[in-house]
Length: 354
Image (spheres, rainbow, N blue to C red):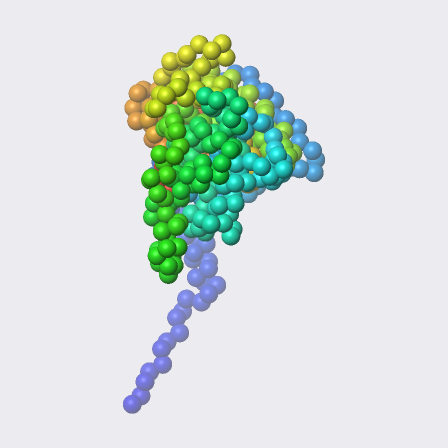
């Protein structure tokens, strides 16, 4: 039986490459599931100057920012009341600190280590809530994008740390690749609601959180940019009638909290924000690095549902002249500014990309 050989296609590799290059403009990407604007509007008023950096520590203005945020499931934001830390935050206070305790449980080799549930542990300059017994050493923490505030993690027992991790940080469902583990191992890696009762005063986060990497102990670029951007954000937010909270959250009773002004007078405002410096989040060469966490109940200036409510939006290469545009476009109007966008996360764990 005679079999005719298959004819060689007339489309040679060079011809195909030329065709693809010539017609590249027809390729369409799926539009993002959130509103965007290409660039940041120019500032309408005088802002702080962009700080000068050492010549050997330049900002990378060439690389694409989209996708430079490492995916994560939760960010644990520890309230230290400090504005800078050791290069490795777990080395603070000779290793006696909440970050070290959490990483001992969740890090490589830890009892609850899970490579498919990445938890970012960072320090912040926010002050911790003060417990009823002032002699008790206490640390507070935020859990984002779950938008939970845990006011009391006393430094007297490891039980509270384990309750925090087991009751709030671990996943409610395991990655299918864990199916090969023993039932006991799988059970150990899952969240347990009964641990929540161990921790008192846990509440939802209703403040806008503006987090700026200011970790000078790790890299001078963030250490220089962080404080300048923090001051600028506070100034611009207050101009937009958004109250900037600076004191610790006072937990007064089960399910009840009250924010205090610097004079100790209760403040009742519809929109409030907290601006804080945080430790290393990756990407020093993209300083200033900013994360905006917009609470689930946030509304736009027109009292409509905020498109980015319940999201964490990561920006890079932010300068003081950009702060006004970020506040107006992202915080108030709910639009992601594409030129700064490193990535994002939605409550529930969905990772946001352009």
